[in-house]
Image (cartoon, rainbow, N blue to C red; front, side):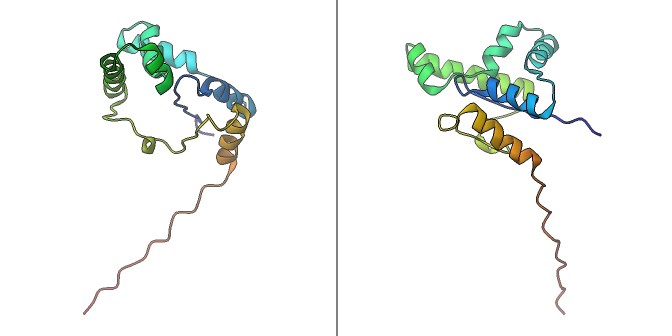
Length: 137
Protein backbone atom coordinates (compact mmCIF):
# COMPACT_ATOMS: atom_id res chain seq x y z
CA UNK A 1 0.00 0.00 0.00
CA UNK A 2 1.33 3.44 -0.91
CA UNK A 3 1.68 6.42 1.35
CA UNK A 4 -1.64 8.19 1.92
CA UNK A 5 -2.09 11.71 3.22
CA UNK A 6 -4.69 14.44 3.46
CA UNK A 7 -3.55 18.07 3.40
CA UNK A 8 -5.71 20.83 4.86
CA UNK A 9 -5.24 24.57 4.56
CA UNK A 10 -7.15 26.95 6.82
CA UNK A 11 -7.59 30.43 8.13
CA UNK A 12 -7.77 31.13 11.86
CA UNK A 13 -11.15 30.24 13.31
CA UNK A 14 -12.06 27.90 10.47
CA UNK A 15 -11.84 24.76 12.62
CA UNK A 16 -9.16 23.12 10.49
CA UNK A 17 -7.30 21.78 13.52
CA UNK A 18 -10.41 19.99 14.84
CA UNK A 19 -11.37 18.78 11.35
CA UNK A 20 -7.85 17.45 10.73
CA UNK A 21 -7.72 15.62 14.03
CA UNK A 22 -11.24 14.17 13.45
CA UNK A 23 -10.25 12.89 10.00
CA UNK A 24 -6.98 11.43 11.24
CA UNK A 25 -8.86 9.58 14.00
CA UNK A 26 -11.63 8.28 11.68
CA UNK A 27 -9.12 7.10 9.07
CA UNK A 28 -6.55 5.72 11.49
CA UNK A 29 -3.95 8.23 10.23
CA UNK A 30 -1.37 10.07 12.27
CA UNK A 31 -1.89 13.82 12.65
CA UNK A 32 1.30 15.53 11.51
CA UNK A 33 0.65 19.25 11.83
CA UNK A 34 3.32 19.85 14.47
CA UNK A 35 5.83 17.52 12.78
CA UNK A 36 5.44 19.30 9.44
CA UNK A 37 5.84 22.72 11.04
CA UNK A 38 9.02 21.58 12.79
CA UNK A 39 10.47 20.12 9.57
CA UNK A 40 9.70 23.20 7.46
CA UNK A 41 11.23 25.45 10.13
CA UNK A 42 14.35 23.27 10.26
CA UNK A 43 14.65 23.09 6.45
CA UNK A 44 14.46 26.87 6.11
CA UNK A 45 16.41 27.80 9.24
CA UNK A 46 13.59 29.74 10.87
CA UNK A 47 11.79 29.57 14.20
CA UNK A 48 8.68 27.37 14.29
CA UNK A 49 6.58 30.41 15.26
CA UNK A 50 7.40 31.98 11.87
CA UNK A 51 6.07 28.93 10.06
CA UNK A 52 2.95 28.72 12.25
CA UNK A 53 2.20 32.40 11.66
CA UNK A 54 2.57 32.09 7.90
CA UNK A 55 0.63 28.82 7.67
CA UNK A 56 -2.32 30.13 9.66
CA UNK A 57 -3.32 33.31 7.99
CA UNK A 58 -5.89 35.19 9.95
CA UNK A 59 -9.48 35.51 8.77
CA UNK A 60 -10.51 38.83 7.26
CA UNK A 61 -12.46 39.94 10.32
CA UNK A 62 -9.68 38.99 12.73
CA UNK A 63 -7.08 40.83 10.65
CA UNK A 64 -9.23 43.95 10.40
CA UNK A 65 -9.86 43.93 14.15
CA UNK A 66 -6.18 43.41 15.01
CA UNK A 67 -4.43 45.64 12.49
CA UNK A 68 -4.49 49.41 12.78
CA UNK A 69 -4.13 50.30 9.14
CA UNK A 70 -4.61 48.95 5.64
CA UNK A 71 -0.84 49.14 5.23
CA UNK A 72 -0.22 46.50 7.89
CA UNK A 73 -2.87 44.30 6.26
CA UNK A 74 -1.06 44.55 2.91
CA UNK A 75 2.25 43.78 4.65
CA UNK A 76 0.78 40.71 6.32
CA UNK A 77 -0.66 39.41 3.05
CA UNK A 78 2.62 40.15 1.26
CA UNK A 79 4.54 38.20 3.90
CA UNK A 80 2.24 35.17 3.46
CA UNK A 81 2.51 35.42 -0.32
CA UNK A 82 6.30 35.60 -0.05
CA UNK A 83 6.35 32.58 2.26
CA UNK A 84 4.09 30.53 -0.05
CA UNK A 85 6.24 31.41 -3.05
CA UNK A 86 9.53 30.68 -1.25
CA UNK A 87 8.49 27.42 0.43
CA UNK A 88 5.86 25.99 -1.93
CA UNK A 89 6.53 27.74 -5.25
CA UNK A 90 2.98 29.19 -5.27
CA UNK A 91 2.77 32.52 -7.11
CA UNK A 92 -0.70 33.53 -5.93
CA UNK A 93 -3.01 31.53 -3.66
CA UNK A 94 -6.48 30.82 -5.03
CA UNK A 95 -9.35 28.43 -4.20
CA UNK A 96 -8.61 26.64 -7.47
CA UNK A 97 -5.31 25.47 -5.94
CA UNK A 98 -7.34 23.02 -3.87
CA UNK A 99 -9.40 19.93 -4.75
CA UNK A 100 -12.15 20.87 -2.27
CA UNK A 101 -12.93 24.17 -0.53
CA UNK A 102 -15.38 24.18 2.40
CA UNK A 103 -16.89 27.22 4.07
CA UNK A 104 -16.72 26.23 7.73
CA UNK A 105 -18.71 29.28 8.77
CA UNK A 106 -21.71 27.22 7.63
CA UNK A 107 -20.57 23.75 8.73
CA UNK A 108 -19.79 22.29 12.15
CA UNK A 109 -16.36 20.61 12.32
CA UNK A 110 -17.97 17.14 12.52
CA UNK A 111 -20.06 17.84 9.41
CA UNK A 112 -16.98 19.09 7.52
CA UNK A 113 -15.02 16.00 8.61
CA UNK A 114 -17.84 13.73 7.46
CA UNK A 115 -18.03 15.48 4.06
CA UNK A 116 -14.30 15.06 3.51
CA UNK A 117 -14.44 11.45 4.70
CA UNK A 118 -17.24 10.77 2.21
CA UNK A 119 -15.14 12.21 -0.60
CA UNK A 120 -12.16 10.09 0.41
CA UNK A 121 -14.24 6.93 0.50
CA UNK A 122 -16.02 7.63 -2.81
CA UNK A 123 -14.70 5.95 -5.89
CA UNK A 124 -12.93 8.36 -8.23
CA UNK A 125 -14.73 9.16 -11.44
CA UNK A 126 -13.60 7.19 -14.46
CA UNK A 127 -11.50 9.25 -16.86
CA UNK A 128 -13.43 10.40 -19.94
CA UNK A 129 -13.08 8.09 -22.93
CA UNK A 130 -10.60 9.17 -25.54
CA UNK A 131 -11.94 9.68 -29.02
CA UNK A 132 -9.91 9.18 -32.15
CA UNK A 133 -10.16 11.96 -34.72
CA UNK A 134 -11.19 10.88 -38.16
CA UNK A 135 -8.95 12.24 -40.82
CA UNK A 136 -10.71 13.88 -43.74
CA UNK A 137 -9.78 13.06 -47.25
